[in-house]
Amino acid sequence: MALRSRTLTALVTAAVAGAALTAMAAGAMAAVSISGGATANMSCSAGLCVAVAGEAVLNVTELQGRLASSSVRVATGSAADDIAVEAPLAWPGPGGLTLDARRSIRIEARLSVGPVAALALATNDGGAGGALSFGPNGAVTFANLGARLTIDGSAYKLANTVAALAADIGIDPAGNHALANSYDARADGVYPAPPVTTTFAGTLEGLGNTIVGLSIDDTADGDPVGLFQANTPSSVVENLRLAGVDIKAAGNAVAGALVASNRGLLRGDSADGALLQGGKTGHASASSILGGLVGVNDGEIAGSRASGTVTGKAPSVRVGGLAGVNHGVIRNSLATAATQAGKGSVVAGLVAENFGSIS
Image (spheres, rainbow, N blue to C red):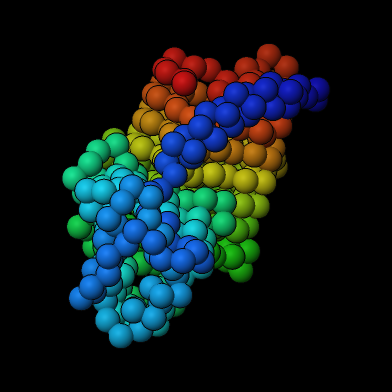
């Protein structure tokens, strides 16, 4: 069967969207830097370190020393806007670390939370428009599940495997969940169905961690296929990375590496090196919709990306590098995936069919 490739379209789309992502990251540069530099423009006393000027530095070694004996709150106060963790930071506990930003928190390096420690992250404390985000080398990891995580005042349930995450969501589909570490899903073998079949209505914070080698081979005709089958408009999945994904879906499939059918908010997510093929033997039927990140988007995708290969080996399928079909909103997102499908298909580097908004 003849295949059509739109790799060039994907690369052009990536260049345009990549510029938008770069501009977005540059605009989020923090005013309080936790780094290897000398402490400057910070006032530290009685467990509180607060910025006293618009550009401030808190030395990471000094902060670790303070955490060895007590809990510490690092705050922008009214003098600064954002906080950036720019050097690796680790402490065993039992003290807790609070990062309190008037706008955004950006994690550019590894932040390792000890076995009995606690981490609290607060954005938009006195400001607006901020978010928690992660650089390419940034992640928050937890030594074990006994540690505590709070984000914007809400407690999060930690999971360290795909199976544990799926079980937690099955028990509390509207709850707050977080991936405690990167996880190698190759040890799980091949999943015969999507790991999370419960419709997700809560928040999943990936914390910059990566699920590697997720493999799904769903032979049930018409099954939505992805890490998540579906979510609701109230759901948020953010800062989660997938790498080395291998997904096979049967006929009449809606399939995407992260979510088959997205109705919620996907922010700062990625599916890298993804191989997405439709069909029981690697073939998709004529009604299949395939996307590198999501199959059908009825919600919002922001600051996210997909790469690898998205293939529908049948005629008249819809294949997009990021999403197969978009009815919702896509902002500041890119795809570098090579997209292929048979004769009469709709194939594009970013979205095969767009009925929504892309910017």
